[in-house]
Length: 437
Image 1 (cartoon, rainbow, N blue to C red):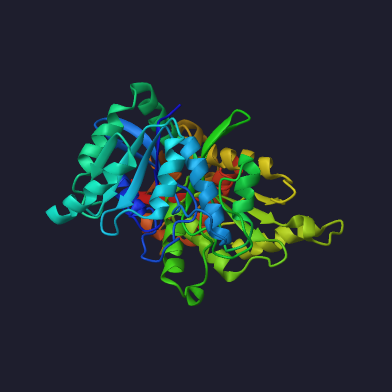
Image 2 (cartoon, rainbow, N blue to C red; image 1 turned 45 degrees about the horizontal axis):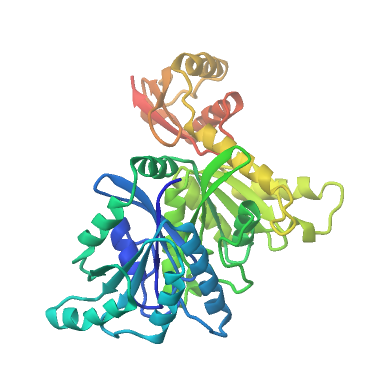
């Protein structure tokens, strides 16, 4: 099992700042408004040659009536159960609080090693004040300033000393798995899909739009299938991004598209494909990601014999020019065809990774060129002599010819269609380059 460290504590002690420092990237949203991190957040990091997982949790609030705070408390408990070690963060500037006490008594019951980490210790006076936290009775105490990074080295050395080589190797293996991200507008059912697939409450699901603010990574290993699922905050139209947080979430969703190999674009069956969905779609196409379109809430639609067929045809028309994508009609709530969606996503992943042998490529494509030559341009006959696949993440093909600049779009489309007809490229954008022979 790979080694996992959870960062817990009450709101606003700097958990997300430390999380970002460990991952050397802006992954968690950092804001002074308490309760910004609502779900558990996952990342993979390494120190002293040891690779491990880090979980950032929402702030722990005990005995609260707020529906989100209750959920956060539940999520913190799950994170503590999932972790091998716990970084318990407190804040030197505010001193010890009742919430810190409540959290400490929860953690004392745990058999996991607890690293008490006093944050915001950035001068000698604060160092003196911070010693009061020794009274919480934890063996390992560290004084750090997460924002500047001072003191984090000793903390990380301690974490690294707990990790075996096998654990580290497993974390690396997980990092190399296929990454599938669930993208789409708010309230299309992305979190419900994730929970239906994983079969546990991994994310907080509610009907409040914008509940998922960060993108969330889940390691999936069931039914002989293993991959990482990324659930994102719903992407909204720019005009609707009122809060800064919403803006962060849009950036985060775009990053989730970046991180993914395959994107599951979820749309609401009743609302159909909106312009915002098209923007998300073309973003994924531009970035060369594999794509599967999931039409969710299909169970709520009135159906006749050809409803699905007509719906799919209308969708493909809107998705053109690139519309060679699998379209599935699903219901996350009823769990209809959701496992089929994963099978297809993994198939698209394989399509995107494949390398077509040059001999096979030339046999097929040169025949297609012979049966329909490129049009003559300015009295030149364009002759394509050779084609090869380039070693890139996105399937890209180089065509060598005498007048590369004279190959026009309609002919490029013809070549792309021939590639798609002859090779498994469904769900994958392809790129064609024309080079001087």
